[in-house]
Picture 1 (spheres, rainbow, N blue to C red):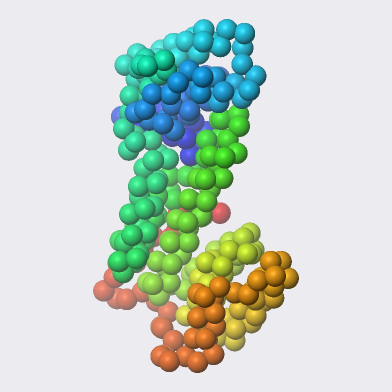
Picture 2 (cartoon, rainbow, N blue to C red):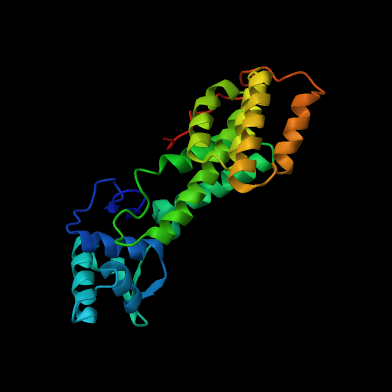
Length: 262
């Protein structure tokens, strides 16, 4: 059985056919359990997260009834009772959220180690798992959503960094521009955008972009650009080597387009 919480909560049989899950609370229960796959979730936590601070009169009984419905849908062995709570009998790899986390981490490490082709493949696979808002069926998902959305943004940054390393600056630019508009104070994204402009042969635009970011940081935060931005500015003012040629190395397979990106 596979579980999806990167979008509407769902369960899939091994052959890919979906399990019929009816009701918002049943999907919320599965989301809470899948988030902690393989670990026991106390009844009190289930009540808090499924009913969002408005528990029924007989909360324990309501959880038991809901777990019974989930077992009928997934199979009795899918949810175990243990230590005052319930556990989804699944490995982390069976849940798309945790699979995304593993793939994104491996992709970021591959990029740090200089293997941009491997990084691009892993990060594409990770981002392709996102089918909608994370944990969409939890009534109150603010904290978890912020955490995983930040993790997704990290993966998108790394994927775009891989694109630049593969000489695909021109292709990466539209997405970088859109992300920088969405996160204007994110210096790591701004570094990638300015690098992409430089690598695409647009040095004057790169310098203008740096100046715009410098003013934005001063006006919004009263701060100067960080060391990475300043170092990049120095490279733009005094280039020590020819600009890279746009286009991937002929010896490297062309990576797929970045996945899961709006």
